[in-house]
Image 1 (cartoon, one colour):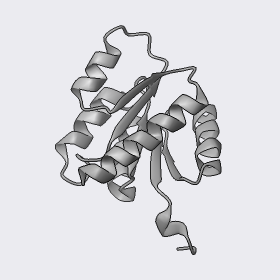
Image 2 (cartoon, one colour; image 1 turned 30 degrees about the vertical axis):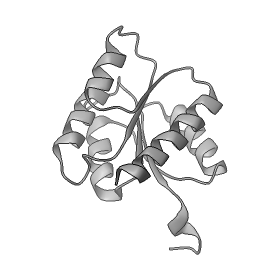
Image 3 (cartoon, helix red, strand yellow; image 1 turned 45 degrees about the horizontal axis):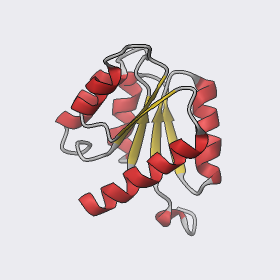
Length: 133
């Protein structure tokens, strides 16, 4: 582990669109976060257990398990149930936000998203998590 790495908050990005993952990774790393990525639902659940991030940014429409099934699996596990989830999605489903909140999502942001709005939601989710533990 490099010096100073311990203070960085780790964020798992789960999205099948590699360009979105790349853009989020660059923006988050530029703002002092450590990122790890997964590109489908199954990999997202695996990485959440392996990496134990402080926050998960989750897309809804993905192969191998949509964001809702990922969130359900994470909430069922003691290792991952308390990790805050921030949905960032282009899903056109009208009830998507309601479903996400029912699964415990802290924030729901639609693509295309405003980068500052996203960073603010991340900061608030991480601050809320710090108080929560």
